Each structure stands twice: as C-alpha cells, then as structure tokens.
Image (spheres, rainbow, N blue to C red):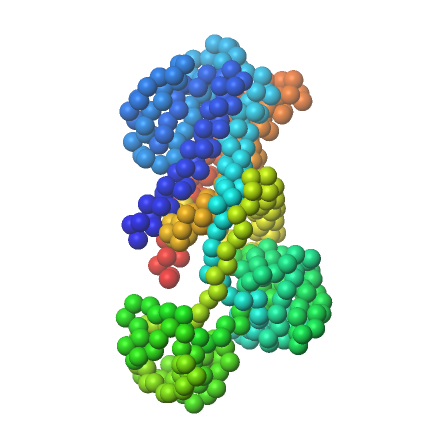
Length: 440
C-alpha cells in the first residue's frame, strides 16, 4: 500500500509541477516577473535565486506553485509591465495557457515515448461470449444480443480498425457509449458486419454491449495460498468439468462455482485434462469470495511494435487527440446527467491510489496513466471557473474586447469565492473517495 501511495503522489506531483513550470516559462517569455517558483507547496527553503526569482523547496513535497509580481491586491502595484495585472491582456492569456499547454505537451510526449519503447500486455483473444443481462445490471436484451452477436463470434474489426485482442475490443467500446459502431465479425469461417450501440455505465461513463472474452478453462497460474495448487493442479491443466457439469469457458466455470458456493459447498470436484489424460481432483474452497480456488486462467501476451520516431510522433499526437475527445465527452455526459457524479468523479485520494496501482504494473503503465491525467489537467484548467486558468483567460479577453481594465477588487473577490468553492468541492470528492474505499 505504501508503494502504491508513493507512486501515486509522485505521478500527480510531476503533473502539477509541469503545469506550474509552464506558467513560469510563459511568464518569463512575455516579461512578467516571477517572484517565487516553488517545488512543493507552502513556504519553504530558498534553494537559490535566478534572475529575480526565488527557487524554493516547499515544506509540502507535492506539486508546486508560481507567484508572480502584481497578481494580488496585497502586492504594491506600480503599474510596471513586469506586474501580472499591469501586463497587456494577451500576455496574461499566454501565461494562463502556459500551464494547461504544458500538460498537453507532456501527454503528447509520453504517448509518443510509449510508442517508441513499445509495451506488452496480458489480455485475452478477440473471441466473445454473451453476458447475461442480469449479471451486468441490464433490463431486457443487451446491445450485443439486439445486434445479433452470438457466443463464439470473433470480432476482427471495429469501425474499420483492425482488432487483435480483447483490449482492442474494450478500448473501442468503452469510449463509444450511446454511439453506433460497426463490428466486423468472423462466424463459422464467414465474415459478417453488425451494428451495435453501446449502452452507458452510469457509474463510470464507459460504454458496454454485454460481452465477455471467451477464455478457455486452461490454468494460467495460481494466487498465494492457492487451494488448487495444494490439491495438485498445475499450469496448463484444462478443466473439463466442475461437479460433473461440462464447461467450455471461464463463464461456465464461474457460474457453476458460484452456484456451489451459494449452496454452502466446502469443496468442488474438477475433471482435469493433462497431457491428454483425464483425472478428478477435489479442491477445498477458500472463504475469500473473490478467489475461492486461488487460480486464474491463461492469458495471451501482446507485444506492440517498436515504432520509429516519426511514426511514434504521429501516433502520440493521435492518442492525445483521442484522449482529449474522450475526456470532453465524459464531461458533457456528466453535465447532461448521463453519468452519476458520485461514482464517476475521482478526487485526489482516488486519483493518487489509482495512479499508484496502475504504476506498479510497469513503467509503460506509469507513463500511460500520467498521459491521461495530464490531458484531464489540460481540459479542467481551461474551464472558465473562478480561480482556474480559464477564468484568467476570460478576464483578459474581456479587457481586450471592451478596452477597459477590470475592477481588480471585484476580480479578486470573485477569484476568492471560486477558490473557496473549489476547496469545498475538493473536500466533498475526498470524502467521497474515502467512503468508496471503505465500501470496498
């Protein structure tokens, strides 16, 4: 847990630092004096001074901030162009854009780096099995059933893009909630096309059509303290029957296993095939409901190509655009009431935890999660809400259009109210994060 939290704090801290560094660089570029650039929050230890700027290490080792001359009524304003509110509005717009754009550029570079170094994922084949509507909280037929998909279908293309594995399927479905998509399906050796409209999971905003990966019941490994391992099972063993019932895939297996647990069974009998020989094994059940046998089924490994620099830049740019579009659409769905805010919005605690969990999976995963959160930083900070960068842009645009200086007292009061509202929202989402952890 400690490692997870540390990795989460590091990843989010880097993104905040890059954001503030963008403001710093842009302020210097347009001639606005930066009084303090802090690595970390709060008053801290001054490391050195550079061209009139104190570079300091804050006492809270997380994120950072950029204090500019004349950005507060408490400052002694002289009217110099080195002061924030005395600088031309176009300069203030550039400074406000500096932070979000730095986050966007970072995401683009990270996406490109992922394409250069390549990645490996554990996934499943692109063969599917239909979900029971009740199992996924749906009434009536699922979108997959309505579209005429069948157990055993192999999805080989979505909207003209090639599908190589289960991750390709989920990636296209989750980002297309409530939008029609065309599937190219291989069924009994023949190619057919079907159109399906993914429903929306109101708790997350993800699209879903009601399918699972078809996973052959071949053991891929065991978890700690595995009863299956103690009973003599081995990797690559194929489970043919459970409690005398034949199974074809993991859905069959877990359905029968769940029924046995509900009936109070303490053990199950498995018919296993190993090296073309079959034998039965009795396996005791653990009390852990999510892992009663301590085994998992075999996955496939997918390795991405190592793209050259020019291709990586192209794919990195496309990934950035795609992530931006997905984030904006998520916000629109949230505002439109299509998604439940309580479950869909993640606060600092949850973001740090999720970032840490994903980062532990490997370096590429660490880069990927930072890319997506950096895109979210880019978009959220451009919202014209008081205290966010978007509000500074709006104020500067007002001045450019009306050619009137805004009343700084009013501006500061509005910004203070906005900041207070953000703090209240921060407390709410943090409390929501904590209650969601407790619920788990």
